[in-house]
Image (cartoon, rainbow, N blue to C red; front, side, top):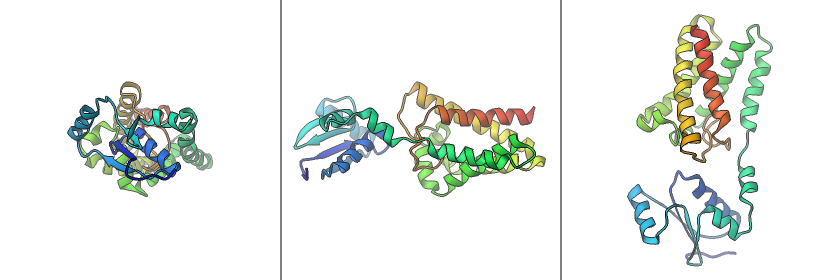
Amino acid sequence: MNQQSSNEVFRRSDCPWGKKAVKLLRQKDVEFEDHIFTSRDDENAFKAKWNVETTPQVFLDDERIGGYTELADFYNIDTDDADAEETSYIPVIAVFGIALLMALSTENIMYSFMGYALCLLACLKLMNLNSFVSGFEKYDLITQRIPLYGKIYPFAELIAGLGFLTPQYLPITGWISLCVGIAGGISVFKAVYIDKTDLNCACVGGNSNVPLGTVSFSENAMMAIMGAWVLL
């Protein structure tokens, strides 16, 4: 199938379903025009024009197909199987597995594990800071209000990681871990369990396919608990 001007996708740049629809069309070698809304008003005007409540909206041969789910049905694709292929916990397993192996060779396994894990996670974020911030601001409540926090976060995580490996700085490390862990945990909980958004976690970098959920919440909870443990 190789068509051009009559195929269109209307979506928000940060919408995961829109990204999935675009990816599916590209997999099917469909040539299409990708329309990204420039503002919320732009999106609302589109919804009113076509009398739809959600976006993305896909048009093939000038006929409105619907969103990602309807597009997948159009091509007889099981959305559960497609989503399973897109998500992966391998990056998280690799980071924490390597951190644990490194910690086992030290005297204080608990502090060393936290230190190594946080340093590795910070390194992955700093490899592409802009990409991390782009993914992080979609669900982090502080970054949504103070964009600079997204760029500071990896450095705070790195400082906390180094602090766990340096005993004389444990009190400072405890406060950083406690505050960052609580704030991050609240953001993840709201995004996943209250707003029920379908996003990737930026914890291992902005380009990962790790789904935002239990693992992300557990990571922040672990930071908060370890911070409280150090302070007490």
